[in-house]
Image (cartoon, rainbow, N blue to C red; front, side, top):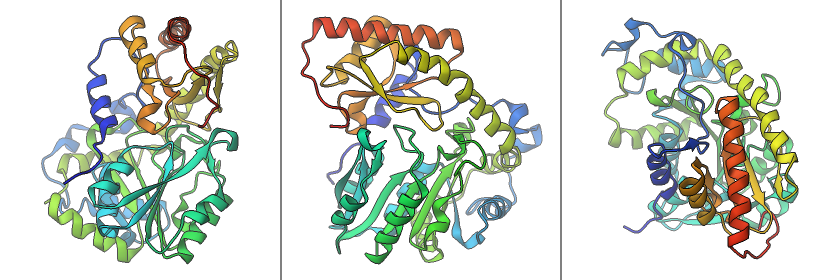
Length: 374
């Protein structure tokens, strides 16, 4: 079977073991036990029910999003949620509209299921939002799925709710399902347009997890909100790969879910304290373009004159000891993603190294200038 490998994930897994100032991650530091509310009892090897996850967790998610438990599919992170949704909906030969720049897993899954990815541009000059008219032109009778993220990965831009509603409505008329990754959304201030888009239409699947905002990647707890007819089909796919959910993870998730407000405030606090440090550095450089992120702990930047960033990022790692993610992994050569969850002193040091690396690279490599977003 031929499919596009998920090369970013291979890169990310290996990068965490590389020496240097790590500014490549997009998730929070691991949550503290006391913040998540964990106790020794939560590490028991049994839970209320492990088949499709603890029903208390299903009820909690359903209550949080004001929907039915029949619309909730518990998953081992958002990544599994995407896999289950693609497996539930796609047939060989279908088309999948995928935002670009975007998360490479979507392309990998599309080709894995024998389908064709169709790029939908998100452009810098449009604040990284899709163009509605362009989107409508891409829809046809073979378009089975549209995949978006909000907050957008990698730019952390917030899509205007009205635009997303219009896209969902257009897709509904075409008989197309819209999958929206909302795993970064809780980085927004509570009440700041942070409601789930699941309520925007009966053709929406919304995914999220406790990973990116809450620092609980290790327990692999996520969920998908889906129309009941699709949720049942997702469970059919799950039956082939997950005999049961890990009991300890379900127990820990039950506790963590009740402490989300506290952990969310911690995540938002890091953004609000660290972003000014990053912005101060960016404003000192007239050769870098960026859009202020709505939330999160990463910024997506473009350095004038750089045609690609794959080689530059290698220089940063090997010669300057700082690790970031090249735009090539998000279909956007010339851009790169910089994380800023590091302690302030380390963050300033890392940014300084990035700047020196750009300057050194520009001196030693003649690069053709490209316009942002191309």
